[in-house]
Image (cartoon, rainbow, N blue to C red; front, side, top):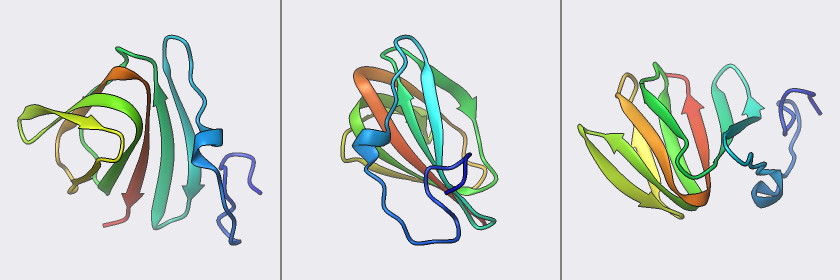
Length: 113
């Protein structure tokens, strides 16, 4: 297993997402689950009130809300997303996220275009 990712890129393996989430009392923790030339999966955990300000990615993004709730800004307005929600963002699409209820965790999958 790689020291920088939670799953090896060259072997089949499983991971318990709830066990892999690591929260900080007043911050954001990100952990790379898997990284290959075609795919990057990152597990994020936010303390309530923490945010990632507006940005975009050149890669296609899929966000799965695992726990808690957030305000996710996309398409020009904030949307409340709760555990179980799935969001698709095409390449270059501006977005931002703020944790509104904690513990808040999300899984981000970035695919090559």
